[in-house]
Image (cartoon, rainbow, N blue to C red; front, side):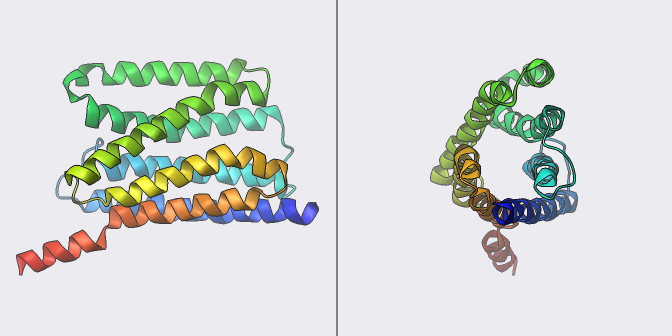
Length: 219
């Protein structure tokens, strides 16, 4: 059991480092743009992956025997996870509801207040998860639908929407199946799935196919 716990912890640590690399890479892509805005997808998803890095890093600490798996630690993780949810909602609002742009900050503020309150007053890990995880899943599913539309309409050529769809679907599988897998001492499988999702997201934004085509068109 100890070996399985350590394997899960080390796989979470590996997935965390991968998320950090992808997050920094997305920030690099964002800075390379001619005009960099805080509403750009690379910037928002960069925040998401950095938050994922911190979340998985914290998650791996108890398995490595560095800290106790307490409710306080879980609360800290929940606040960090909000760093993943916040940009996802921002992306959905920017893409689907540009006509109410003046209300975007209010909607994001409501989510922030709800998330923080549930995290702080929730009496158990299970209660906090019941109240927060569905929101995260709804946001991810909303993004799957978003990238499905951009894939079918070919509207977002600089991002491989089909790869982002696959990445997000794998993220859902990792989130939903992670609880059961960890209960069976197979948490490393969820971490592996999450790592694959991270790689797909990096490829989607790097999009070497689009860059190669753009270079060919220019020459």
